[in-house]
Length: 310
Length: 65
Image 1: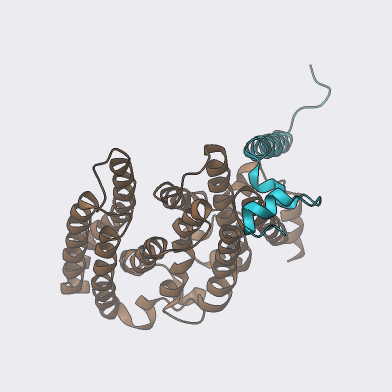
Image 2 (image 1 turned 135 degrees about the vertical axis):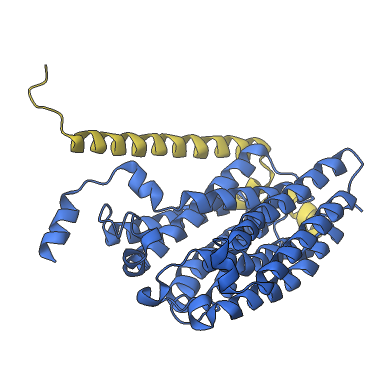
């Protein structure tokens, strides 16, 4: 133990190791959805204020990622996919991850408040708290529904972007939140079906382990059915229009067909074609969210030319 | 020729210091740009002025005593 910790202390972490604590891939999704939330809002924002706001929303999301890596270092060390993360790999000390997470959280919230308004900053603070404490500390190791409730943390960015522009929360921003919130479970469970990680050893009650894979397939179908009306409601709201509705109809139908195909299969069929359907639905689910938010953006551009919108 | 052979650790440490330095310069730039924009546009800043401004009371509350 002494040897391991002293080895860790003699290693000087590079800048990239600290950057990796911020989960850059998650940050890219946060930047995109927050940017769309900001741009589709009915109130214009000065470009410098907008860019600053997006930057600090992303930084806040990154800070919560660092706090998550500090708390989950023991789980990360057990699972193959996460073993290479800076803390379990010994490149960054747990205390450093905690310090970085707390400091960046404070900087991000204060700077967002100064750049935009207190509503946006409050939402960002709540998002960080939700991901680091509610999800990572309370839910992740306690319930197989961890993904469902924890998905809320990833759903806040477009709401924060909207709040930066408008200073409040509205039906449209709540619908964008609901879209990501309902999308997260089928997206993640599709991944869990073919990424057979050692959740059991790690002590994480993943649905595939606690309720079995057949039940997970049913859960994917049920949550996708619940997702469809949210996607269509977004298209019918103030941020939607004929173009968004057309896109939403195609995307939701496609996702629903994919979820049905997953539900109809059993493990023998999945093993036979190496989880081809599960993998294709997972890949499509990424495009689903990206294209949905891109449609909101296109609709906003069309509106500015007097074409889009209801 | 340097007196000491550069170790891989020194390169990594330099990279970290350079990264931190550039981040801080970027942060200063952001705060400066934000300040310029806020001060140029100006209007909400008057709300934090401690000097009484009757003209503001008129516009914000509509009840000028």
